[in-house]
Each structure stands twice: as structure tokens, then as C-alpha cells.
Length: 138
Picture 1 (cartoon, rainbow, N blue to C red):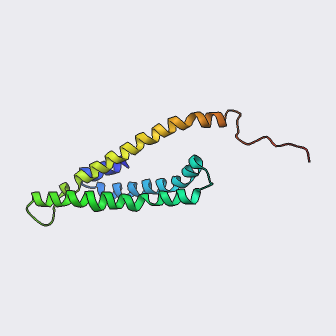
Picture 2 (spheres, rainbow, N blue to C red):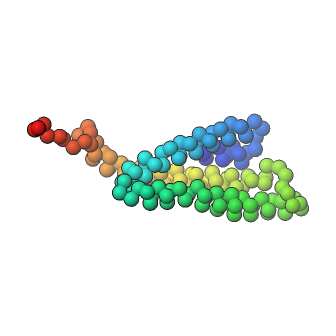
Picture 3 (cartoon, helix red, strand yellow):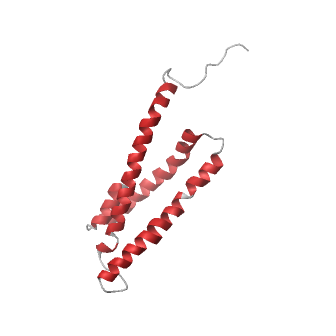
């Protein structure tokens, strides 16, 4: 997603379609892996609450980044052009750079989470499987 937002911010000719397709793939992967990751990290006991909390991320992010941030920066760029509307790639460049930075921060936090949870999985899979041994007495 970082590369996608940087492509959007660069506003190079011919990158819009490729960046949009890549962004769709990234969102698909993100939403597909959210549910199993949450169940692995937090368990299934209160999974309904955890899933609903995760579902708040999309509308909350849309409001913060699209409604507030992008709108504010767009209005500032339009004011620089002495118009009510903004023309050109500068209208959303800073917004895309901020989104790339937020994705970079998310990547770093994911790496930290991976490093912290790795010993748990090494301990679980040390015997080759994390299944409990089953007794053969019928």
C-alpha cells in the first residue's frame, strides 16, 4: 500500500490504473487476513466484539483521512490557486504522502508484533505440531 500511495502522490502518466488495481489487491489481502489474525491473537471467546471493533476501522479511517484530512488539504490547495476548486496533482499529493506514512507506521508495528509473538509460535511448534497427543485407549 505504501508503493500505491506513493504512485498516487507522484501523479506520473499511466500509473493511475496500475496503482488503483494494486490498491484493490492490498485491501483485499488486508480484509482477508484480518479475521484469522484476530482469532489467532485474541481467541474466539469474545470474537464478535473484536470483529465489530475491527469493522470500525474502515469508516473511522474514511472519516479521518477522507473527510477531515483530505478535505482540509484540498481546501488549502484550492486557496493557493485562488479558486474554489483545485486543479492538478498537488490537490491530493500531501494526503497520499501522509497515507503512505501511516501505512509505513502500520508496517513497522506489524513487524514489532511479529517479533514479539514469534517465541510463542516457536514454543507451540517445537514438537512439530501443536496438537495435543491423543490417547489410543478406546
